[in-house]
Amino acid sequence: MDNLKPNKLNKFIPCNATCPVECENYYTGEPISLGLNKPNEPNKLLWVSLCFIWFLTVGVPTMAHAELGDLFKYFQPYITVQEEYTSNVDLTPTNRREDYITTVSPGLRFSTLPRSEVARAQQAPSAEQKYGMDLDLQAGLVFYAKEEDNNFTSLNGALNAWYLFGQKLSFRVRDYLIRSDELRESEYSATAIEGQYLLSTQRKRVIYFRNVFEPSVDYQFGGENRISINYRNNIYEVQGQTLGDSQENYVNPRLIYWFNIRHGITLEYGLTLGDFESSPDLLGHMATGRYTYRFNPKTSIFGEYMFLIRDFESPSNDYDVHRPSLGISHSFSPTLSGSAQAGYFWQNPEKGSRTGGVYYDMSLTQRAEKTTYTLSFQGGYTEDYFTAENLGFTKYYRGIGTISHRLLERMSAGLSGYVERAEYPSDLADRKDLIWGIRANLSYEILKWLSVSLEGSRRENYSNIDTFDYSEYRGIFRITASF
Image 1 (cartoon, rainbow, N blue to C red):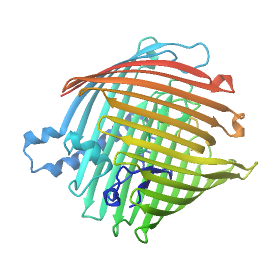
Image 2: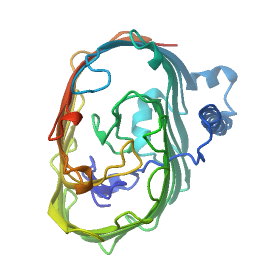
Image 3: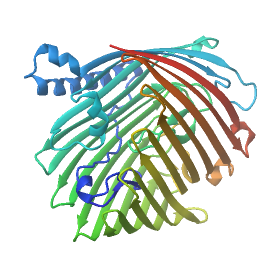
Image 4: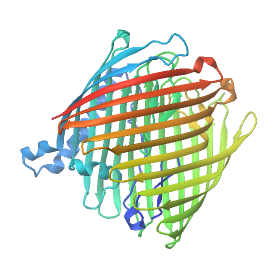
């Protein structure tokens, strides 16, 4: 199989393996969400919780042959207590308010695999792992020291389940669930880099709920040929009068076919149905074609053409996007891989002038026993929908770097940073933002069941519109006990 794999944004990430055979069982999913039809908040949370319980009851019967004592080995209850300081609780340019936020979060993990195998199975279930499930559900009581009216109950959940029907057919389910009041939401894609955020930013502490649910079916025919169908249901609901709820339904069939060891193609289509509470609904189409030439198991080059259509209900402005590009991927070693893709894009709006520019997507990833790092650079444009602001088509440039290192057997440290440049549509007053942030963390496992971590961060936004400027210092101390 080609050593690049497509993600939901039609980009490609490098495979760590140096041999196509090792890549055959790799599957990269796309997030989607539960089909909640905007019920009230308590019923919605109850319904989602019942869904998680339903998945749990599906996994448990697979181990019915085990004794009751063995069954409890698959569960791991835990509790986390976190103390956070923020110098700018609402990310305002003036009249900044600091606060201390205490969060007490009991949680439960469930996995059909030993802990040492969970991370590997989340990416590449093999024939030895015919079925499996990893579930992590956590609820938090959040208390503000000064602004007590901001107190709320948070929720975080992640599900990864799969079933292999023999050697060729597989079924997979992913789910991402969050209830939070964070002003800028972390990227929820299954392939997102740590520290990657959605572009949209809320301007006050408002509770939002998101659930991204994705089932996928993959059929492999021949050594490296496969066809897959992915579905994503993405629910976003937010409290407040000025912000709108939204729901995305996305269907994405994909075909990968190799004519021989050197020549292969990828054909992909995406249908987007967007339902927005306070703006016109969306009908979107995406088509991508890619030809790949493989020099050897480590190096491939490719040419790609992507075409987008975005059709909104009146009176919004429809547009289409063309993006031809060329790229290369290379595995330098079993632990170091990289890819680079560059081209040109142009947007043709129904009303207004055409927009274009250089497009690029480059990444370098090292995964070793003690040190892991990732460098990623993207440029050209992004589409911001199903978020707090729904900023739409935006010229966008971003660089992200992360590194983690195990200092001692029980101690690890990490450092990450990002820089982003966004040029918004003309109907947003020609707004331009330069956003950057840096974060450092240190964690230590005191006992096998007890760990602590310390984190510090700084983030800023420089905008040509003063009301969007902000800066913030943040510090977090966290202690977790597992049972």
